[in-house]
Length: 266
Image (cartoon, rainbow, N blue to C red; front, side, top):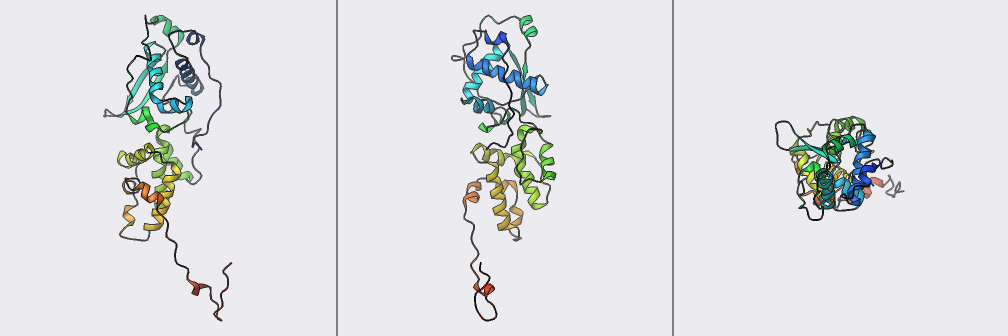
């Protein structure tokens, strides 16, 4: 089950898009999706990723990339990349809707590139591809359904970040909850989490690993310091997830009464 609460609404596709023969049917649907989100949120733009659109329309990321490029080349959208401060790393991609007035004032291009012949360039940033992790189009602090095992105090920690990164922040917040620490949501801690999501693991898998290793290491001075993102969520993650929890041996003496008889077993 997705950790996003889905919001139902009708997709609106403007008439001037519907009857534009230069656009493919999928491109028109995607425009309708973008156009509707921009209006529902009231922002006039959306930052939805290619991975989210691909999951929603059951197509590949490359197919989505073709349609986004076609809409951009035909003047229906404008793409703005937002970079992190003092960095060349992309924080997110904003897609702005070009209104009919703006579109007509610029004039239609003579010819849009054929989406099947145009070379597709996949953006390899974590914001655009989102590591192929499906997300709902309305991923916001209002509509996100946090796991029940994360307490309110630590949900607030997660909410201080970009809604598109909530799933990456939740494992750190839960680890803080278990340890009573204040581990930061820095890239060094987020990087192994993103890698595991890319491998196909879920939030519940992260919780399981944290719980297992917490129980194993919390009382051991030589191991407790390894309760950290780089160790828990690194290359040994799958091993931690699938390891069998050793059962403590049955101690019959705990259940014997003064007469030596067994009781209180059930």
